[in-house]
Amino acid sequence: MLIDIQNDFITGSLNNTRAPSILPKVYQLLDKHEWPLVVASQDWHPEDHVSFAVNHPGKAAFDSVNITFADTPTKTETQIVYPEHCVPETFGAEIEKGVQTRLHNLEGYRTLVNYIKKAQDHSVDSYSAFADNQYHRFTTLNKELTLHGIETLIVTGLITDACVRGTCIDGIKLGYEVVLVQDATETTSEEVKQSTIAELKGWGKFLVPVLSRDTS
Ligand SMILES: [Zn+2]
Image (cartoon, rainbow, N blue to C red; front, side, top):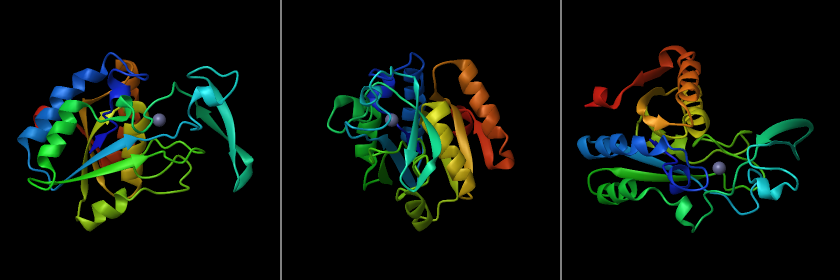
């Protein structure tokens, strides 16, 4: 699984200097292995999305805002807000070129490639590729994996403590064995990355951290 390996998380509005280091690892995983199914998720936000700071007057990027939902009006949820990112038909929303080229070469030839667009609903964010943060709606991902008899998820991508974390946790909840390729995921600092991996390890045998060389 390739989680949100999109330009905005590498060189764009939500870039971090550590993100590009995963690319050779991801290329290698795509070039040197035969996969029954490759899933590539993409953050995919309308311009009025709840996670954009610009849509909350007086708020700056990385502030928190309180939001409520129509079906749970007395319950307040916290949303971190970000610079605008991953708006369809922008360069930032596109999958990084080296990864996308490889996916095009694989599609319908050596393997199946499934693209999952997430967080398209303006009112709720979605870190996980399986469902939005409130579990209001699920993507087609679980159905696709079931259809293809997939039991183990090999997870890579950006960023470790948000969309990779959310996808790993939902995968574990749904009964998959989740293998996190530690050098094919990155975030803003080594401390944040390691604390996220430690948290995920707390899910016991369901989370298996490996390095990309261990997959060869
Ligand atoms: Zn987003």
